[in-house]
Image (cartoon, rainbow, N blue to C red):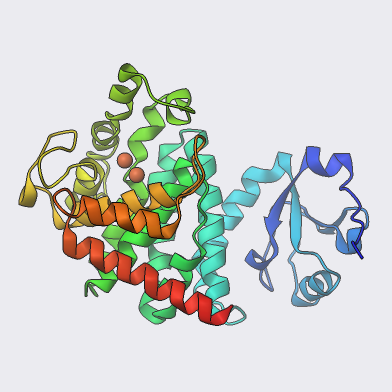
Length: 335
Ligand SMILES: [Fe+2]
Ligand SMILES: [Fe+2]
């Protein structure tokens, strides 16, 4: 029998934004009103601005079937500030499993990056979200190796640039870890470089970025400027390291000199940029695009192997394929 679902009331779609339940912990002091809609009932306020959420209230709502909470769109900015701060505490929370922490970090960061990307708020993206994300991710993987597999396994594959940036951050850190890197500072810089690698696309017009069908030569030229634009945006920012700048500027270079923007050859491309190139291609292929469905893993692997003949680093490509295949095998075992 198919259960009939009551459609949400119109005002729910118009005035409220859903937010994840698990971001809220016992003792969260709210600077915005929080709403819930248990049992498909009418939406109601469960905590007013200025009040503290307690465990009993949270449990009551979860038991009543609230899968998400809601925030009034007018107070969404206040929620974002709360989310940013709450993310900083996620790793240390004892009431959450590692996969749950990973899920919250990934989904909340993606949402914060989406808003920063769409409003071209580079300060927010570069200064605030980047630091929280990078610290969380590296703390998670260094405290529990399984966190890395959970992260790679749960990546979303829509075609948005902000999703791709967070994905490349996860993937390039996973690849570096797989290749034996354990230095936390290096892993942080790589996670950061991955997150920022396509930041130059904030200056590319959205019509070109999301165009369905072939790009005209002028549009293609515009798109190919994004590594230079990214470098321009970031080079003078305090706290951005040379390694990160190289990942931003060189991730479309190819070992045989056929890449852009400089047409560098072989070891002229930094190892970190070479790792970025491998996962950048894999994520682009396996993500859904406006003009095509996501490619199957097997087909993406075949393309990576072709590229590895001359254009991308073979050892890195093979290590990445191994990483994904190991995680996919684990997932199948759990199915
Ligand atoms: Fe790129
Ligand atoms: Fe990219």
